[in-house]
Length: 195
Picture (cartoon, rainbow, N blue to C red):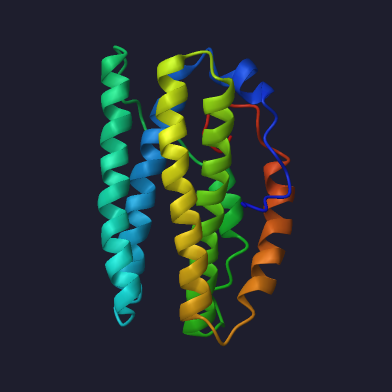
């Protein structure tokens, strides 16, 4: 369903994440907060698209509720929310977005596909976590969140196809999948959701 071209090696969980639960939870909390901020940014940038505004308003609330869920999990385990981590994976994906010199519709398409890509990779990582983490509570936690990420991924793709119908959305998505596979090949060695 996700069509990602490179899968996460389950050893990412065994070698990196399992011993660093506090780190992965802190990184995850900030990923949820950034997702909410991104939804709000789309509202501000494209207020003329009523369907986009409505769905992003709902998404921002859902992402902040996920932030709270992760924060509650951090506190339940006796940890504290650490400082925000730099997300090198996301920063590399940003380079693929065409904004300058492009039409408003092309910029919107790229931003929606960018969001879809992050949701797709997060969904895939949450599945790997839920299948391989040696912590039953977190396995269930990540299985539930994986389903939300899958919904978000499909929502962003549908919005891109609908709001940018005059563009080759599917061709651009295929190019983005190729680019992401090359980017993610350099990750999988740190206790980050995308690391």
